[in-house]
Image 1 (cartoon, rainbow, N blue to C red):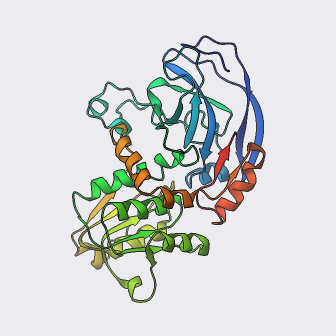
Image 2: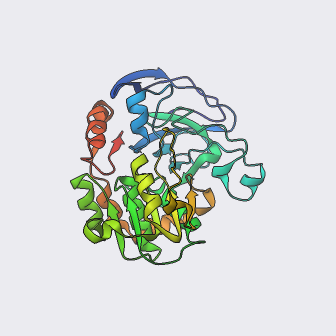
Image 3: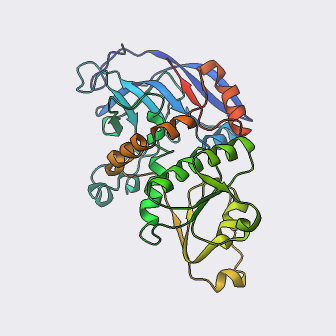
Length: 334
């Protein structure tokens, strides 16, 4: 056990993954930082791969990546010692108006994101704020628990916002990566139907059909929808979504991209009333609702976790993930 309580423990070395760029994953050994007051050590069990990590994989990352983390609290004497937990990635203050209102993801004094501006979960252990760990119910398997973060939490929060504009009805998802597939499952749970999806990868397109979506082709390709969810981060898909959104409808932007997006004000767009909604992550107050979504669709969510690998094989896992050959692979330390 890593002996830690309120930052008091002997330093240890851990193995981790480094992303120097160019699609390279390098296994390294580092000295784990000592926890500061209010922080604890989490021993990582799983860290799921995310489409947004592909940018770090290609361009390089100054910190250890990995932000869909499930682990065990490893802190002597702590009330959660030995408990399986999720790691909530926004390092929120807990005191600003947004935090007090329960919108922890919108914190005014956000101190970075775990796995982005702070070391993440592609490592044997990670130091995180105590307030950022979420106990996992005993009935949720370790393999499925990471899905409660980006795959369920992010799209479910976006749809809760979108329902203020558009209720049940037809919907289309652009992109059937893990975020898009999670969106399809959330749409189904929230009563939207029929569901459509656009996805170039045959493997991911087949998975979209398995969860009840029709592929966007033929007549449906020119159809307009009351709700369009762009879940790939692809700029062409975003522009396609603008045109596919019906008058009075909503285009939901979930996909991540660092490339500037230029909107050309064509007459079709100038002469249409519609909403554009950008949603980021989810507030902690929604976690119980998200756990219930996982319970309701457990067998479908289990289909998404289609590969696991140890740290030494993380590079191969990323190559297959980038090629569209995997849905929601996970790094495992068990």
